[in-house]
Amino acid sequence: MTPSPGRAIHPDLRPAILAWFGARGRDLAFRATSDPYAILVSEAMAQQTQAARAAQYWTRFLEEFPTVGALAGATPAAVLRAWRGLGYNRRALALRRAAVVIVRDHAGHVPDDLDALLSLPGVGPYTARAVAALAFGRRVGAVDVNVGRVLSRIVGGSLGSLGASELQTIADASVPAEMPGAWTHALIDVGATFCGPRAPACEPCPALPWCAYAQARPGTSPDPDRAASGSARAARERPPPFETTGRWLRGRLLDLLRDASDGTWATIPDSLGGHGREAIEAALGSLTGDGLAERHPSDPRRARLPIA
Image 1: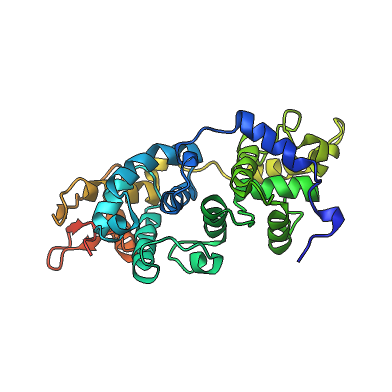
Image 2: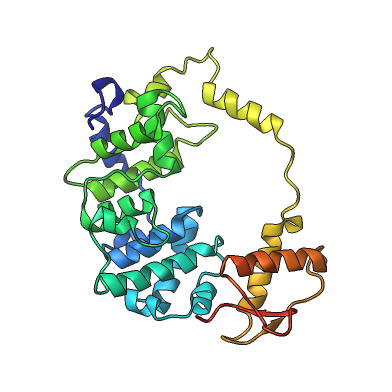
């Protein structure tokens, strides 16, 4: 499927964005590698986590698990310990399961086929396309939230202007044959640097001359994205302090289990922060349900990270 001329990027946009990226793109550690396994790890880490923060953990993780085989052979507990600080811990277990499948079904080599990548545990459309483009030079558009904002505004004129299917078609068609990896990073950086969700910085953005959104922003007219987001913010209640949330409690319980040596049962306290026994039991039950913890078979007040 080819996008209509009115719903495609201008041909001059690519060289402008790539030139900006070459001069000012973010210097992130994992961008220096072409190893498919290392790229898969980086993309798993960057899901729901800022890229700069993920890059801080990436080198350490690869030092502990330098190959697909090393990760596949590790216990879930070891992987969860190495993941400490990144959050969204189910990603760590999914990455380990993907390594097991790669060793079992692909002779220990990350597959270069998009369908095969999509079949790996925890690998969705963005991650599969990012690995295909960055590691194997495939002309596929990896659409994360940053890329989605950039292309929706450039081509459609506003957030939400493109359906998922059309957005993917435009993203695929935008990828240059000679630099698919650099293009993937460049669009992500444009989104992270200029094209924020609520207050885009259009004037310094390299896409400015070809962006439908920027061209429709006269100073006396309301910004449709900003107005919509402002209304949504006003309608939302102020969130509770993080320490009172179940997510905080789950994180503290996981850290307690991480502090115990492999296979050792940790004693769960009756209170943690401002949370009592009932809340702790609910959080520990959800961790167990997600495969992130194991309960002692005879003592409900003891738990550990999974070892198999």
